[in-house]
Length: 182
Image 1 (cartoon, rainbow, N blue to C red):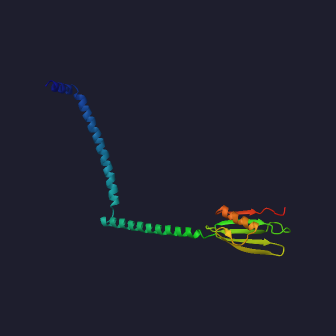
Image 2: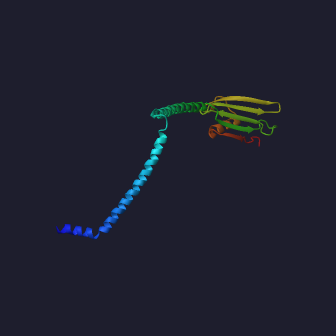
Image 3: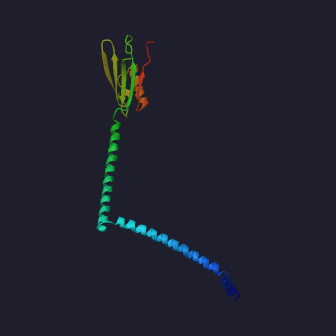
């Protein structure tokens, strides 16, 4: 019993500290209680604002309406995605590789008024237009290109235009042919 007496003795001697500690704990718990009451009050206001309406049925109707709108948006996104894929496929058939070479077709003509234009799609199919300017007039020729090659013999400028179109991929490049007459 000696140890029990020691504990009681220590408690009697430190009673003021024990009571002070308990009072501090009660004060802290009271502050936490007030904070919780304020938070609950704010939540009740938000809940009441959320639940405004005639009844819970109006809230359900609103939620169902929004879900239907989401379904419509998902369907629209799917249609838009399919349209983009179709456009990408169609773009492969559009002329997107272009090479232009300007040159003098004849010695007596200056100003590099003649030109060759190569127009190719994504598969390197297309054509070359060659326009030769002379004193008598302008003569235009067209040659088909299949998979980057022509079945008709190409002139030097036409070959250059084709090479530019094949190598410059999706960019328009204009070059002047080197003067062969020099």
